[in-house]
Length: 230
Image (cartoon, rainbow, N blue to C red):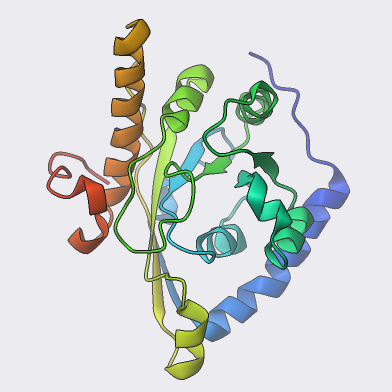
């Protein structure tokens, strides 16, 4: 599938300005360590899949990532004061969680077929605690349709009260750990077996992320990480 997706110059400019503003602020508030830069397949299409605990993962990743990935945001985020301003400024693709939206899927596939990265959160929303939630099958569906590589990324140290902690103590540490890109196994089954295979593939994405994290972050995937390499 040939790509036709393009980002207007003024959107790219806004994103670069946002990053210019947010980077020093985040460096001031937090001690940020980034590992695995060499694993990013720069200049190509890939799905950046990360864990999502709090409000802080998106600005951290978008603020320090060497490229400007496209991103999806839950439809409710567009209605929350403060968050809606940032998501509109960056320019995200709105999605209703748990619903199939052909137009959204086509937009994401267009991004990837155009050779650009796409950032998603397989859990489908914030967990509000460090333990992982089970992945939604949508990530596997997207990978299957796009035939894209997946880049697992773990964000360690974030939580809902991170900003309060930053003001109370000396700069909490945040680690962004980037794993090696991988491909999910193809799905050839039909019907219920196909749905089960998609869920298994979605779980593998989360297990690859979990392999980059301490055990206390594994959540529903506790005891299943052995054999998966970050």
